[in-house]
Every structure is written in C-alpha cells, then in structure tokens.
Image (cartoon, rainbow, N blue to C red; front, side, top):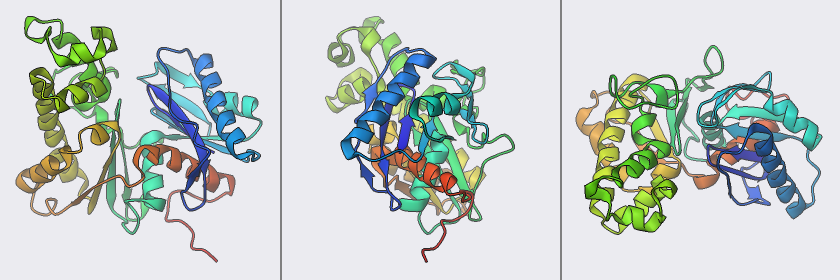
Length: 324
C-alpha cells in the first residue's frame, strides 16, 4: 500500500510491481488536525483502499512532505505540518498491524518516476515536485541520493531572495516562499484585502479571504482576473530564476517536474524551457525538461514501491533488479 501524506491532503492505494494503482481512496483534504487525528485519517484511507480490493496488508509506504529518518521510521521535521521528531512509522504500524516505511515525498516521487515513469532509462536526472511545498531529489550516476542525514533535496529552502519573504522553515527568502502553493495562497489572501484587490475574482471564487488557496488563484487566472494574472506572472519569474540555478548546479540530463503547481499551471513548462536555454550555461542548457508521467499519484506510487522494495530487503539506492 502506498500513502501520500501532503501538507493538506492524504490519499492511499495499492501499488503493483509495475506501478499500477488499485483501490484508490480518493484525496481527503484536512486542515489543522493534530498529530494523532491525522494518524486516524491515514488509517481511514488505508482501510478504505484495503476494503476496495479485499487484500491483506503486507506493508505500507508513506511518502511525507518532511525530513525523515527512514531507518528509524521517524519524522524529523515537517515544517508545513509543524511536526518534530514524531515516531510515525511505529504509531501507524500499531494501528495497521503491518510494517510501515517512511520516505520523503520528493524522494518517493523520484523513486516512482525512476522505476515506472519519466525518469526511466536515465542515470542522471533531477526531480522537482512543486505543490503546497517544494521538494526535490536526484539520481546521480545511477544512485538515488539521500544525503548525510537522509534529507537530500531540500531545494525549496535554498535562498532565492536574500532577506525575502518569511518561509515555514526558520529562514527567509526561500524558493518555497515564492512558488510553493501555501505562499501563493498567502500572498493572494493579503492582496485581496488591499484596495486594488477587493473586487478580484479570487475573492469572489473563494467567498472569504481565509478560503483562498493557490487553486483559487489559478482558477481566477483562467478567468483572466488582473490580480491573478499578476500573481501568476510573479510565480513564473521566480520559478524560472530558481530552475536556472538548480539546472546549473545539478547538471542533469533530464529534469522531471510534477506536483500541484505544475498541474495547475501547465503553461509553465515552455517558460522554464526558455529560461534554461537563455540563461543556463551551455553544458546545462541542453537538459530535457518533462512533466512527471505518473501525475497526481507520483508520490503515492513511489511510496508503495519503496514499501515493496524495503519489505523484500532490496536496496532502493540503485536501479531496479532485472526480472528473472
């Protein structure tokens, strides 16, 4: 079973050896639940998926937007959930009566796309997932990188603007504070209270400022609302600047982009490709930019794949074992 635990949603499904999905629970949106309440929500999702297919649970993989210690099954730091040092794997395992394996959501997405999606056939590529937060992971020389404390890929917390907007981490000016979904929603909520934003379609669509999210902004953008257009243009510019730095720094042969922001603003891809061709160094400018192939289930499929491989005692650092 794979579980995608994001900053605002939880979803589960069975994941096959070939990356196919069955018994999808559907996305359950939550707001401000505490740790134990969210554990109960995860259990409800898993039980719904289990009931849909009537199979016994062998193992569950949870892809979570957090720094995790996978070997200990602990969430070290989840800024958008406001969790620190939580024994999530053990707490879930007690409720589900099976092994539970934790993996950072961006690393889960990278594993899923490497095994079953847009990363297949490449040994040097970068995966960037942009949703409520911004996460990344990379395959370099055929190895899925993990970092010294299993926290590799926190590119959303690289500085984009010195001394800039506050982030959910202890820093300011992070990439995530400019292109993450929470940051887009936060800026829109602030803008609609100003004189030039009070008549915006953003506010009309949401009903009240407190209900505005990035999704609201994107819907208003499609309706050609001036404030939404201005906000999206800002995201385009900051996203392009961030991508140029990441491509120059990592030198991937392939850049795979996924997450809710990419799904909500598909026109971003040609803008980012143009920024790379124009502003990256020559050796990096030839990177092949593609969308994540597994769509909204990228993290879920990666988490299920991770559970399958860990449960069978296989390393997830290198390529998948050949059949036979």
